Every structure is written in C-alpha cells, then in structure tokens.
Image (tube, rainbow, N blue to C red):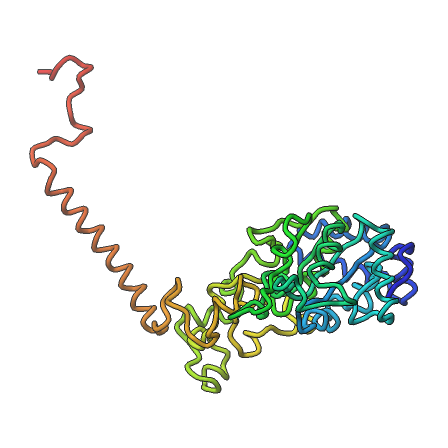
Length: 377
C-alpha cells in the first residue's frame, strides 16, 4: 500500500504522471456527483491540492469482495490514478502486499499513530452469533476488529448492502446473525452508509472528497445515506420513463419492446420504489447501468432489498402515473375527455347561476345607493 502519508496530493499525483488537467477533470466529476453548483469546483480543487493525504483503512468481513472489485474497476474516478492517491491506503487485505503478521502490524501502527484521524471503510456484514466466531481474521473476530477500528476512526463508511444492513448474508435464516456496521458498533461517529450491491465507487469517492473539502459529511437521509446519491427516485431519472408514461412496456424478454428499449415495469423493475443515482452516475466510465442495458432495477440500494424486493421479477403493485395497462392512444382520449368534462362543468355552472338569480333583481351597478338618500323624482 501507499507508505508515504506525508506527501500532499499534488506531489503524489505528479509522482504518478497525472497532469493538472486530469486532476481538475476529476474534481469536476466529483462536484457533479455531489450535485454541487459548478462554483464549488475551485473550492474542491484548492482543498485537495493543498491537503496532506489522510490515512485510510479498508476492512473486509463477511462479503464477496464485490465492493472492492467495483472500486478497482471504476472509471470515474480511476482507483490507480486518483482514489489511491487521495489517501494513504495503509490497510486493505485485497490490495496490500503484506500478509499475516506484517499486515497485522500495519493495522496496529495506524491505530496507534493515527488514532482519531484515519478513515475507516467497512465492507461486508459482521456476524454476532456465538461471540462473532463465524468470521475471524488473525485470530480476532470481525466484531472485535470493527469495534476497535471504527470506535477510533474520524469517519466510518459502510460500503455495499452487507456492511449497511447485513445484505444477502442476513437474508433468510441468517444463522451467523450477521448485521450491518451500525448495529454491530452502535454510536460510532460520522457514519455514512453507501448501500448498493455493489456500491458505486463514484459515490464513495464523492463522500471522501466532500469530507476533505468541507471537513464534514454531506447531508444524509434517515438511513445515513448521502442525499446526493439516494435522494431521488430511480423511476423519475430513468431514460425509459417516457415509455412508461406512454404505456409502452416489455411484455417478455426479447420481444419488440425489449429491442426498442421500452419500460421494464412489467418485468419486475423496482425503479418506482427505489432511490439511487444509477441513471445519472452509471457504471463503467459512465457508459451504462442495469436498466439501460436491459434488466430491471432490483432496488439494491434499498433497505434489506433481498427480503423486501424479491422475487425480483414480480411486478410491483400499480404505481403513480398513467397506469401500467394504459396504451398511448388511450392516454390521448383520456386527456381529451378530461378537457371536455371540464368545459361541460363550466357551462352547467353558468346555467345554474343564471337560473338561481332572481329575474327582477337589478344588476349590481344599477341599484340605488344608500348614501344618496333615496330615488330622485
């Protein structure tokens, strides 16, 4: 891992041959991901340019390593060029060259020399049954390691569904009684949950950049998820939304609607109930995301989605809009009919008002004035 925490970011980037233009482009990407106005670009550039790299520890517990793999395969930002250089990554079992005792010594050094200063990233669920023995590293349980490391961190970030709320590990019977970081180590400070299976590395990088720039976490929702990433419904951001409103749906895999990119609602897409920024940030250098590639959203960034959103191919109940079985031609007739009804109601209202007015009642402007004393001869 990087063993030069004394370097500032500019020096680290220059050592890797990264140009100033590439650095500013990265900062611009982070500003856009954070949904900040463009005027904040200068503040982000200045903060990262002058900042000494903070120490980061990445722990993996009961997981598939999918979130680490997602981070390594990110395109915006690229891990090798930017994320690894933003921080001094002292411990990450998947990436570090050291193993065994040497790896343990590295972690102990960080806990001793940087107590209260380092950033802890947690991947995977944490078993609690039988004292946590179902996941042990170096003779210590994941529960003990998480409690010690996260309790002494400046910032804690749970990446992926498993680290957030237990994910697939806690779905169903859950014999290891696995839970997310928040339940395993309650009360830790500066906790951010980045749900998703896996997480989107652009969001993780954006949270870290926000912290380095503003010295605080971004605005969070009730699940401690950043609002910039989880504040909008996927259905409202989806490029297939117009097909939903027009009543054009994929009826079966490979049909005409599937080839034309129609809405996947009838195929079980959970987009109308899920919140995430997948449609805007996307994956693989911003190329695509599951719905664009032809598969419905499974709401992987929603609470306990393995239990609450499955079966993944079952259609959701009727959601707001024009209705799942309404065709485009019917929408036109409905709209025309609504206008007609409104016009008829207005006409009827005018007739009723005319009929209830007394026939011999003078118009308001022709009534004699009380102020004048009485009618003139």
